[in-house]
Amino acid sequence: MRLTVAALGLLLAAPLAAQDKQVIGQGPINPASPPRISPAIRVGNLLFASGQLGVRPARDSAGPGTTGEQTTRALENMKRIIEEGGTTMDRAVKCLVFLADIADFAQMNAAYSPFFPKDPPARSTVAVAALVNNARVEIECIFAMPAGAK
Image (cartoon, rainbow, N blue to C red; front, side):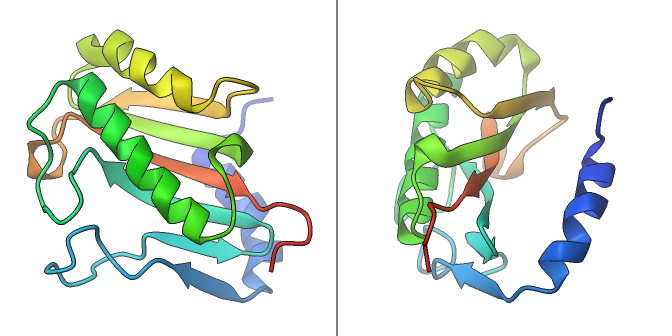
């Protein structure tokens, strides 16, 4: 049986709605930008990380760089945020990758794979018409929290 994102959301909504949510992180990587999103939200034993671009810390634009380089930076940004939230990359359970050009899939995959060397998370990859700041890639993930994490 295949679950759509909407169906997954409905399955998670009821038990998670009864739990407190905790914002992880202080805002975008560029501290000069006003927060428009939460970098991550923890609810129960799950941490939902917002989509990360391949931006350099203290800058508000993607790249320049290849899709592979932007993938590496996006996942490094992700790692920094989720470690602040008390979990690690090896606890990723689901990731969604947005590519500006599906022809860059192999390049993205080559840069993505080292971040998940064992038991990689479930993943979807989609091509989109455009990403903010002319980014080539954006990645969002859901992580499980370690047992006993507060």
